Each structure stands twice: as C-alpha cells, then as structure tokens.
Amino acid sequence: MKKLLLFLLVASAAGTGTSQPTADERPAGWPQFRGNPRMTGVAASTPPDSLNLLWTYEAGDSIDSSAAIVDGVVYVGVGNGDLLAVDLASGALRWRYATGSFVGESSPTVGAGTVYIGDLDGTLHAVNARDGKPLWRFRTEAEIKSSPVVSDGMVLIGSYDNFLYALEARTGKLRWKLPTEGPVHATPAVRDDLVFIAGCDGKFRAIRIADGEQAYEIDAGAYTAASPALDGNRAYFGTFDYEVLALDLREKKVVWRYSDPDRQFPYYSSAALSGGLVIVGGRDKMVRAFDASTGIPLWTFATRARVDSSPAVAGRHVYVGSHDGRFYMLDLETGKKQWEFDAGAPFTASPGIAAGRVVIGSRDGMLYCFG
Image (tube, rainbow, N blue to C red; front, side, top):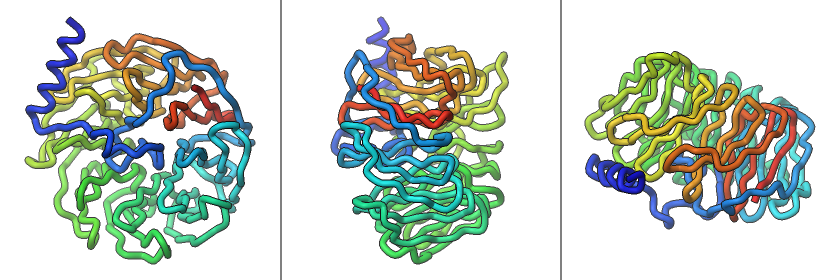
C-alpha cells in the first residue's frame, strides 16, 4: 500500500507539471549549497545503507557553512573565517584560505576551478580550487549569509545590504545588482534564464539572469529565510509565518500552504524535493514530508531540538542534522529513522553528498565524513 501511495504521488506530481531532475541534470559531485542550481537537495550518488564514520577533521571554530564536494575535495567555510579544502578520501587538509573576516552560513560554490564564498564583512571571495590562492574579491555593503550560485558565467549572491548581485565569474566585475525591500538572506535558485529569490521582504522574485530585470514577483506574505527549491513549474519553501508554501511559477500564485494548527514555529531549513515529496525541517523539532502536488502531510519525524539543517536526499534515504546534536538518516518513503550519529554538538549546516559519502560540519568545529 505504501509503495502504491508513493507511485500515485509521483504520478500526481507529473500531472501538475512538476518534474524530477534526471541523472544527467544532477552534477556528479555536490558543487554548491543544496547540490545544484535548482536547490533540490538531491544527490547523484548513493551512500551505503549502513553508514560508518570514516574520518573527522577539527576545523577550529563553529561550522554553519555547508560543504561542497568536487573532484574528491571537500570545501567548507569555518566561523573563524577560514575556507578549507579537505581530501574526501582521507580527511587530510589540502589548503586553507583566510578570508580575514568571519564566515557564517554562506556555503562554498565550485565552478570552473574556482571556489566562491561570502563572509560576514560583506565580501565575496573567489579562490583557486587547486591551491587556495586568491583570485578576486568583491565587497558589498553588509554581511553575506547567502551562498553563491554560478550560472551562465556569472556568480549570483545575496547580501544584507538588500541587493542581489550578479558578477562575472572569471573577473568579479559587477554585471548588475537588483534592489529588494529587505536583506537577501536566502540563496538564489536558477532555472533556465531566470534566477529566483525568496526574500526577507516577503516577496518571491523572478529575475532575468541576462540583465537583472525583474520578470515578476509573487507575494509570499511572510519573512522568508529559507532558500526556494524548484521542480518543474513550482517553487517550495518555508516561512517565518509558520507555513510551507508551494508556488505555481506559470500562474504566478500560491497553490498551497501548510500550517500545523498545533505547532506554530518558523521554518529556517530549505526543502528537498524527491519522488513527488517535499521534505523540510522546522523549528518545532520536526522533519516533515508533504505531497508536492497538494501539500498534504505524509509523514513526520521528531528530533529532540529545532531543525535548521536542510535535508538532503540520496536514493531512498533522507539525511538531516538537528540542534539536538544528532545526524539522522531517515527512510524517504516513511520517515522512519534508519540510523543516527550523536556528535554531542548542534548541527545547523546541511549535508553534502558525493562519491557515496556524506559530509557535514557541526557547531563545535568538527567536520564529519560518513560512508
């Protein structure tokens, strides 16, 4: 019966114009926050059903940044301002780049041999992926917590100065910047020739990548810190008004909203999309899965503290951290716990998955690799 229900959900999603990325559309590694420009949080490789701790690396300060993994190297930002490159196979440090500031939630993005990351002084850094040498810097007017995204030869990044920026990836030259009515905390999502941001101003915006002109906006009605996940003609994200939303990008309207009548807590975690499901963590300590077509809740999993970590999906499993100091592997279909690891320190970062391994950092400065 459960398998039949999941089949019907996938068929229903297809009927509403949603689609799942094919293997060819998913990068082999995990080059950015949420794994790909559509921000779906879905990996191309599948870790073992039974996970083991393979290595740890002590970074020296809190890790709120989520790891990128490309060509056998893990890239991650550290609270003390370091950008680290760590060998995926062994956990050995390859190089360390000092931003000269502090790094919060901004997560590295890797493209064309360059690593990009923002810091809390408002500077976007471009670093050579091979040796950690600086290539260029671009200064905004306020802190950067958004993660960069590379598309069409440009780097897209939000800042707390209320602008979304587009810079030439090779040189850092400003191509355009779009004003909003609040800080741009969330990471932009990209589909085709448009970039999408969910904003602290309560508006969901679609912007043309070529020239920075706004194509349209949809009123989300609430402060939004989560980044949007895109699937076909829909976008999904949670808000600080205790709701999870689905937007129809063709009709330019909200098609469903979910709010738990008994648990009124914000959503900070960004959603993962897989198999007709929307999976998201909440500050009410719960991980939830919804029918992507209708918003009907399908399962919940209770952690022991709030879930700001964004879930990642690989194969038939969901991977997510919690402020309770545990990293969980859940069954995608049922939400039942398959495995957990007690790190003893909160997880706010999100997992990166590549080459059959899962990497995540904790707030006590430990970087973990499981496989």
